Length: 304
Length: 321
Image 1: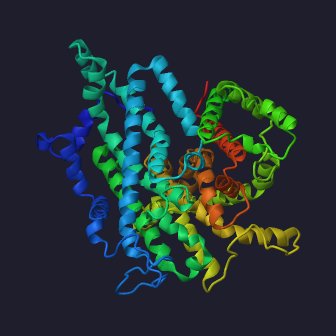
Image 2: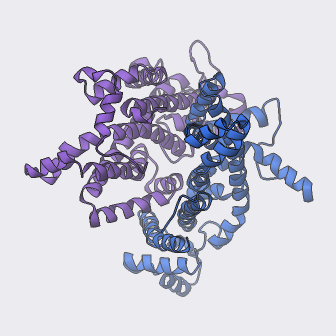
Image 3: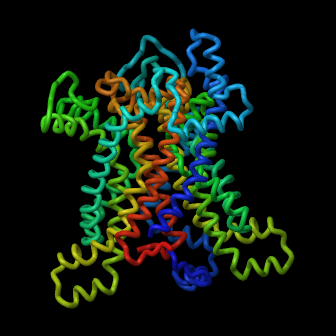
């Protein structure tokens, strides 16, 4: 990527974006391209279904999520309990829907936390350069150098595992990649003429950063944010699977899957762990499909 | 080259120092005094006081950090709260199985990922290419622990008991020589697959797009124009250049392997570093946790350094100075 042509970018973007393009903006054009990408749209539709079922979990769940029923323990799927019941007689299907609400929320909140941190630090590092930049980049290096899962697990063990700590931990550790990305965008964008024009008009630094430069860096940020939700959901699932994320009785896809650690469940009661595993897979797959399509739609130069 | 390596090594120092600070602060957030657990309460009070002095537990935070850092730099990683054994001994004991697991996973990644990536690129837009794209998306999206559990159920527990379900070797069996290696390899297959799946999928796509990029270049057209067989063009001319960036993947995969190892080792009850981390988490064994995180940070740095060096070695166009 050494030869990223600075001045040509918007021009080429427009040229590649269909016929003289009727004055459509970047986002409208991107949406048009996205709609033609069947894989990405499949991902989007699946995400909408998952999102709606999470949103309406209280209405959709056929049973009370935490209702313990000791006479109906570990029953296989039936007309009454579509996905059977767990070791406390709770309805697995209801917990799966509620678990989606929890897992998706944790993913979205965690990514929002790290978007704020990453975008803010990346912007000021790239805009100001010099000392500010080196300090922020060294901090980024430090956070990046410790692999995510061990450090997140250690933090969870220290802070006491909970749903809020899970969001905070993923948010506080996840921002580094985005920060580097935003900084890179700012490094190229800040030398452009429109920035000079804004400076000449006497715009304040903050205004230049957030009103002038940031909107021009939005495309890669959106792609990174979308794909980030996938890794945040995976992060939550990993932490919860090992017992250091969302805690019982609150269901999350990850902690529902952790019952399979017991060999009896693994072999004899697949209804307890295959559905949450599958649904994590589907959610991650949909986000990856959408994110990939979004990248192609927003930056057609990358398309093969 | 030498100056580049030296400069990179010097750059590692402040980052590693920062990492020690971060790890120290995280552990210090724990309620109570995480280090006091190192001390056996039945000990002579004078001895306790001496130990508290040694670990500087009564000092202000910066001094505590400094004394811990000094001990760490001298190679004293402390003593496990739970097992009362020196941490470095515990780590050394567990290192073998984890290295075996990581190396086999990486071998799988390269053995499967590269050929499939090449095939997909030479038959671009064929059904085979489409299939590999689907497999790649699935492989990137499937959580390693779910995949591991499925492997465990299908290939180790249900009907076909093709592979052992847990452990590093058959317990009690006194094997030696080739038989021992075969036994370990037999135990390795499933965990290595579970650990490698994401890498396989990633590398497949990577090799495919790198190959497509290279196959478009002029010198490939020249090679074809002078009448070389397509095989020679693809495997002798294009592949060499396409694989150059792959070298870096070896180094950069290290942190992913570490994270994956924690989950894989806990599913397959693999007696390695990941399992050690997991049990230490359950026991809140802070000295072990600190040492492990520090070790992972160090490995990540070394990995990215090796990636850069490897890149410079195989690609003469790259110059670092």
